[in-house]
Image (cartoon, rainbow, N blue to C red; front, side, top):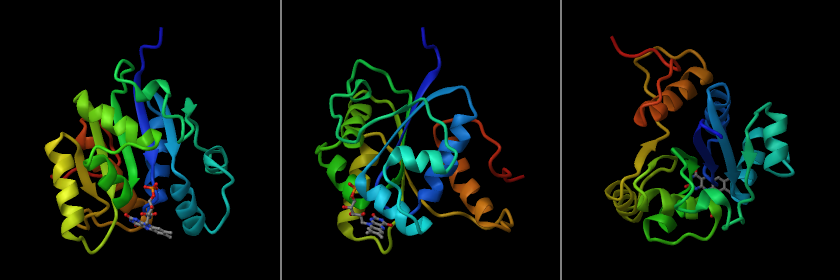
Length: 194
Ligand SMILES: Cc1cc2nc3c(=O)[nH]c(=O)nc-3n(C[C@H](O)[C@H](O)[C@H](O)COP(=O)(O)O)c2cc1C
């Protein structure tokens, strides 16, 4: 019997695949059952950011030396993790596009990541989302408020600077450390304020 806690990472088409890589890399070294799915727009974005062409999510993971237990097809709306009876303990949507936020805030779930979000919210499970967009319209804010009211944790991809970051990795570690803190997953990705 699989007694590991189940963690899902969904990647959508906002900028910041560097955050997904860090999250996946960190979680893969912990004792979790780790699964992942990505939208086509997440991969398009990763292509632009990494100046390459990823054939698919498998290619993305392999070329970035990321090991996961299971890769889901974004269109597999009938996957086990999209059902209320299959518990996913922690879901992270990193990065989250405003399109994704708009759809799930309004009960629309077209792909697997959206359906899984729908289920996490109705089952009151832990789901944390990192968005990256600026400036913010009232529509974005209204949608994010709806999601927070429904139980999601919403975080901006906004690193702090009081910990004296020297590298991009320091900035990314801070954001992902705070994300993990938000669902009470202990981590030492950044130096806590003393
Ligand atoms: C190069 C590029 C960068 C983008 N960056 C962002 C972004 O930072 N934040 C965001 O919310 N949307 C961004 N978008 C727009 C989303 O990709 C778009 O809304 C898309 O429909 C989201 O699809 P998905 O939610 O199915 O992944 C970007 C699009 C492109 C092509």
